[in-house]
Length: 79
Image 1 (cartoon, one colour):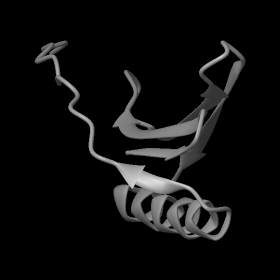
Image 2: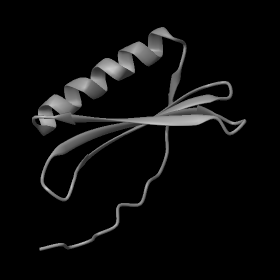
Image 3: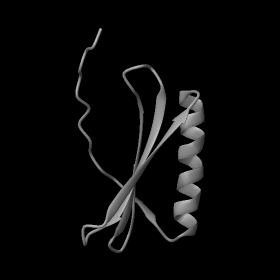
Image 4: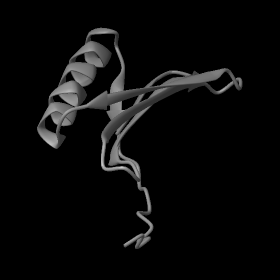
């Protein structure tokens, strides 16, 4: 998901890493090139969704709006 406020943005992704852990990654920055990121391990997909809801509430309170974006999911098979 992507939130934007003028030149500032936040992108949040939920995924499972190669060892099976659920990860919520937050990447934030601005159009001038400043950026940073944070990875949070959670216990389950439902915990990841709850964290995503919390992040969404915080972003709306800060004046950010959700933007529609398209991401391509690559179908790697590591089995």
